[in-house]
Length: 618
Image (cartoon, rainbow, N blue to C red):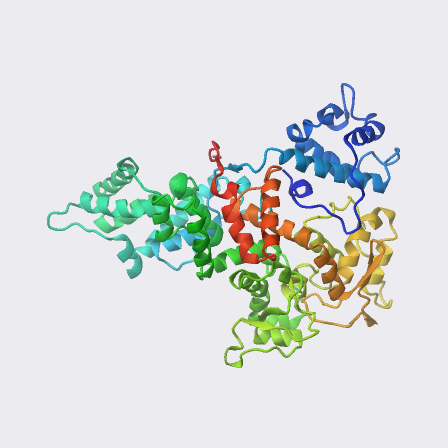
């Protein structure tokens, strides 16, 4: 399902203005009959959509996709078509609220249920890290693999996008050869793999069998049988018949294992699947020996085993992989240096300092991980007395930070000076840069970023043929971004959405396009105020307070995101019940970041998903 549609019923869609009372079922049906009957009844309904699909309460589960699309189009004013009688904005909001509430009630009537566990391929990063761990090599082999697109809740580990194409197959063959050729020359790799060799009383076949019996369980992340080993032993024998020496024949055989579906796809059985699910969630790679041993003992379903295990895994340096991949995709900071590159002429210090660019990109990642390790409140993401500081960030902020000067170039957990304007992720340059244009700030991009990434209530896509901001004529006095947006919003087509988006972005106008603090734009004082729901907010402090007032919306969105990342799939309507339970637990424990991770691992969909019968696409 489209990510925007899914956000409607999985995320809490509380708008920034007060919600109206939801409709009753009869009132909702009356609205549809009044405004939609003319186009969506009869033998040839418009767009192929007939009102019969949504005529009763049972249709909320049977045709939930239809309800979500209908709700979205009515709320956005796309239906009825322009020029026909239409419900008021207040009535559209009540209708949307009614659909959301009813969808959730119907989905959760039977309680929490296990969700699907679709077959998925290791994505590019997971494949790279797994091969590195498996062979004990330190070589970036993944750069030659095709990039994986985002799916599910916006992450590249989602099963919906991890199919196996002919191009993937070709590239995996090349990459496996590169990895095994490198491993064959590395002392540590050879020692890990070549645990036996032909010798007095040991045939080449016997030595190969011993090597494969040790290697394949680690590669396939599960115990193996003689039936599993047999085809690889035949490959070894074929290589030997082709006059290959013992070691080249072994590495040729191992290369075949690295392109096997048993390696490429997450298809482990039972508790071994849970070991892999936990390991790829928190480490981004294969389970270690302890996880495999616990799976073999059947102990991974026990919360008394899982809770200390989660803590151990998060304190391992490998958990930085989880923080990096999750945060960079959730907050879109992965785009820095790729799709988002600040203009070199306008921001020369950013362009010239690799240390500054690295510190800016890593700051939200390290901050998020520290919240988990220190068992601190997730509300620090909105506003905080603390941050991650370095010497380069100190200069960029124009502040004196309480750094340990003996290690000032290293990231440090520090307490911010009073009035620093840097608390929470919205004061971090990575977020401010990725929500700007290369050459200027954008209240629209920043407001949309807050609605989407922070609140989980993305604005609808802009209508077609929207005019861009008018550039000043040659020789004319420069205009601030705010002045140009005021002209833009004079267009009624644009005004309705921008009234919801722009005020959030205006509150961040004191930060330039690389997150440095400023007090003027185009020679004029910054106006960082905006009207939301009849209330004025001004500057980052009041924006953060607005978000703190919506803290449960922020928490629910973050829970949706992390649950989708952990499960490696898009969330379903029934997953909203799991989200409810996790959110309640986190709130009961003071919004602690570590509790969010724990409750996701303890959830029914994570521990006991329904095994899917899907097969990999060719």
